Structure formats: C-alpha cells, structure tokens
Image (cartoon, rainbow, N blue to C red; front, side, top):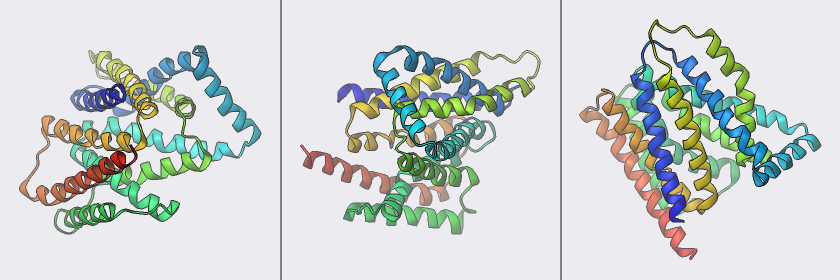
Length: 286
C-alpha cells in the first residue's frame, strides 16, 4: 500500500509540474504541445503492451472482447474523444489564463462523480456524502450568483470526466490497456497538430518533450497506484491533485480574491468531508 500511496502522490506532483511548464511556454501553441504529449505517451506505452507478457495478455484479452462485440468500439470512441479533450484542455488552460478555472473543475470532479454514481448507477449516498454535496452546492451557488458563474473549463472538466468514466464503465473498458487504445485513437489528430503547428523562431521543444515524458510517467504511476490501492484509498488521494493545481495557478500569477473564499472554502470543506467518510469506510473494511 505504501508504494501505491507514494506512486499516487508523485503522479499528482508530476501533473502539477506539467501544468506549470505549460503555463511558462511561449512561442508554441497548445495544439502542438498536446500533439507531442500524445505521441510521446504512445511511444512509451506501446513497448510495454507489446513486450511485457502480462501487459500483452491484457491487451490481447481486450482486443478479443472488441472482436467479439464490435459495438463496444462506439463507447471506446466516445471515451477516447472525451479524454482527448481533457488532455488538450490541460495544455490550453494554463497557457491562456484558465489555470484557476481548471483547478476548480478538478475540485468539483469528485463531488460530481458522487452525484453521477447516485443518479445513473443507483449508488447509495452515505450521510456524509450528502453533506459534502450540499456544501459543494453552496460553493457553486456562490460562484454562479455572485462571482460571474463557472468558467467553461471548469464545466468541461467536472461534467466531461464523469461522462468519460461512465462510457468506460458501460463498455467495461476500465483497464490500462483501454487507455493505451484511447491514446492510439488520438494519435492521427496529434500528428496533424504537430505538423500544422507554427512555432516562433528560436522556441525550444525541450520543455514540450519534458511534458510528454512526464505525462507518460505520471500516467504510469497513476494507473499503477490504482492497481495497488483499494478504491477508497485511491479515491482519497485523488484530492491531492486539485490542491497542487490551485497552488500552481497562483504560482503562475493568477490571483485569488476574498470573494473566492466563499467558493473554494465550502468545496474544500466538502472534499474534506468526503475524505473523512472514505477513511472511515476504509477502516471499517479492515
């Protein structure tokens, strides 16, 4: 379990680092950065699923399911498109002044997932989960009424990712091999973005390559943590990333004002309630 916890925390730190690097880039567009990230991630994933026996067997089993039920490709295409948009947004947002809006989306995501589980998968909510949803609603309500509403990156993250996870669950594409196929599906567009990109003279690709490599490593650690940890503990650790993204947004120069406390404080409190509820549930299973 300690290895899984460490892997999850390092993955979150790497995602925040990618966020910071993206925000500091100049002379290159987010589309090309996204393209390089996809291609480099695929170049790292393909040897793993082609050469490592256990991973190769996992991929062959998934391909066998798709061959037996070609209709699963419909859900796979939806999932791939949705995660592609999210990966693109992760490059675009810090380069265009939406870092805080992105961090808020990741703060809201676990809470929206709780609601989606209740509405679409008939999952029962504990008393503490209900309290967390109410607290989050207070923060969102303040943002909607008094702070100009939720920015489109916030909505795209907190509403888009639940649809992505729902599509994966519907097709039972929840394995690491499925993510590799999703990246493969995105590669043609990524290659197009690379060749269509227009860079300013003298701009370096070194930070872009760093983003691609760090992104692949972070995803490996993230997926590895998912396989090493119980779902409850893995879910608790998912709250680390939005905090780091918020700090990264402030480090990039985006400002938090006093009024923002009335949005973030109830949502952070809601996440704390969810975390405590998850911790209690984990202990009760031991």
